[in-house]
Length: 160
Length: 110
Image (tube, rainbow over all chains, first blue to last red):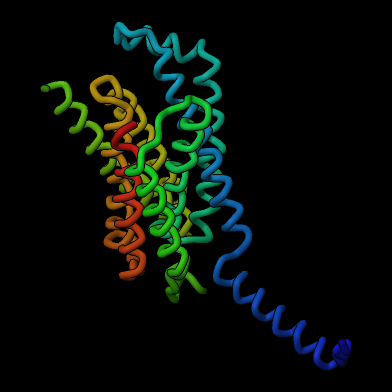
């Protein structure tokens, strides 16, 4: 069997490099890394927040008196944790909104519903049924559709 | 039964507040002159929403409350189209509706 000789000319390499670079730049332009990182962080914080929030609300005294609730909130480390996470979420969210449309960022962050669901299944051993799996697939499809749209509305005053 | 109705009502109010609050936050980063006013009102509205929501959890299951609050998606998309004049294409609406349906299916049984 004869080994095939592949000629690699510098020109070809340069062209390939150019093609990869321009392709990468167009991907970057369509979906900037800062926005991607922000959205990912938002989903992570939101997941943590929902899980902590859930356990914090469940730990409140059940008599419903507002003053007792305020006292409980001030003494409960879970609520301090909630407030800290909310502050992080808030500043991260403002950074995202600088880069993207509200109607783009908001639906993408609903991926946190899926992560919360997966964590509850993994750690709380909640039962899974086919309808929920179908739901997850539909959400993923929806996020794919959103990702196909421009992440920011082009307008003259915004460009300037 | 009355309790459930109150809970649903409160959560629906929360979705409307979420839409308005998010629009205010977005306004603040769009280079508005009084951005600090937009951001403060946005925060106040979202805090109010949190208070109402945690109150609503006393009347409703967490699962039901989650399912109804996935209406947030529709509310926010609609308001960013009308109030912020964002370009919500048909593809984006399809995505939003799919996510809405999907989230409903995932959390309805929680």
